[in-house]
Image (cartoon, rainbow, N blue to C red):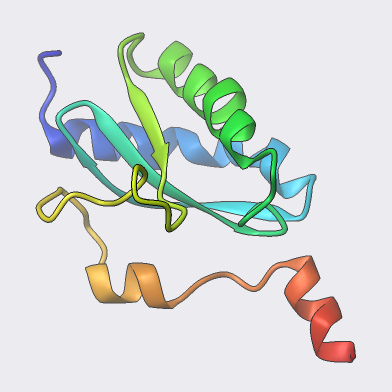
Length: 116
């Protein structure tokens, strides 16, 4: 792939709102964490965080659409706390990495839990 990490980040940042419509309809959100060597790192938040279908959402919705919109060889990884889905130590981002991981969007289930 002949694109820089910055180019891929900018393209993902531009196109994620379109992809995010589906995730929003399920009470979730997508946070762009960074890019490295053709891999886009995201975090599914809200009701999608920890959902048993999050891998399917990542690959069949987010990755599929971003491949159509940006490049057919892109890979999308949902950084979900498992050993195989982690951010590399060095990656491109425009966010403060500490803020990216600490400030999670409050989802519908988080709001419901506060009621009890």
